[in-house]
Amino acid sequence: MDEARAKKWSRLISIWYLLGSVIGGIFYLLVQLSIIEEEFSLYERIDFYVEFILGLIIFYGLLSIKPWSWKLTVIVIPIKWLFAIIYTSQNYQQGVGIVYALFIVIDVIILNLLFMPDVKRLFDIQIWSSPKWIII
Image (cartoon, rainbow, N blue to C red; front, side, top):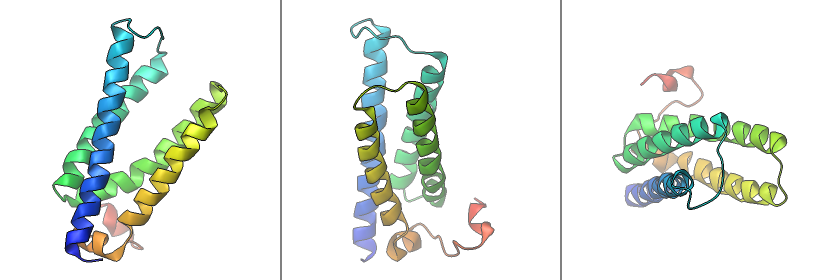
């Protein structure tokens, strides 16, 4: 993979995060306008705002090839998995596990792409094994 392909993957991942934020925002708005009859718990509201804001931040950072966005994405993905497991275990509905599994597969693909040498080089991530990568 060369730098041009690494930039294309970065753009694609950034668009994925933008779509997630926009679709989540539209759903939240439809619920708030009572077009969709649903009620959000406090946890769901906080989760929405955090994911919406993080999605927009990650979109901007990955699109602009900012090293902090690579780091943020790598940190956020496993945290999202943890919250998805907790939420699913507390509010199980039939079929939700399949949807979460699909998103986890997409996240694994994203992580795999982010850890490709050319993508890491594009974001100026040299030393992953050292805790120094955390420093912005």
